[in-house]
Image (cartoon, rainbow, N blue to C red; front, side, top):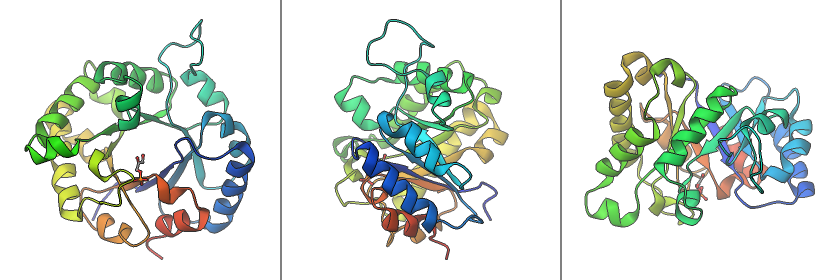
Length: 253
Ligand code: 13P
């Protein structure tokens, strides 16, 4: 029996205009029962945060952002701070998504700074880790995760990370339709929990939520959620449609 409350999160990436985002959020709020037993979060693009926040007020769906910058304010054209995200209604922020690492030069060092900024403003960091196909095939999955966790969480103590969420997103499973099998996900999640235990102790290892991300759909959610160390999912493509995402959220019904 897991004592961690599952989190089902949707990452809308660079999809949806403001109007489309509001419409999807409206549909979603209707489709998710108020007494849902899981935490639910959606992360629209920055431009839709405020209007979507208004739609979701009073519902059980929380708002997240897809990125942030670590400075509180300043001459950083194009960047958004943690305080700004809070003011737009965010409770969560996704950090270090593989697409940001791949296309925008994000590193474990910048991930570390962003986590620090997020927790300072009481945003829940959803920190993404995961290996590429080449790294998996050459048996480097665990060493890649070792480094991402060691550097990404460097200089924190366990009390800093009480709300931490880790998202394991194998790059080869993102948007490809290739889901990691539930056994593959479980093996990695167990390993990640062990890493957290070694670094931060038993309490944090038991409470940290570890999500799986990569081609999660209504037809594979149940199997993934049966795994003892899978505490939820970070959903990309299948979160864009309210009906499909609500089926994932309502996987127990
Ligand atoms: P897909 O669900 O589209 O594979 O994307 C996963 C993801 O990157 C979520 O952050």
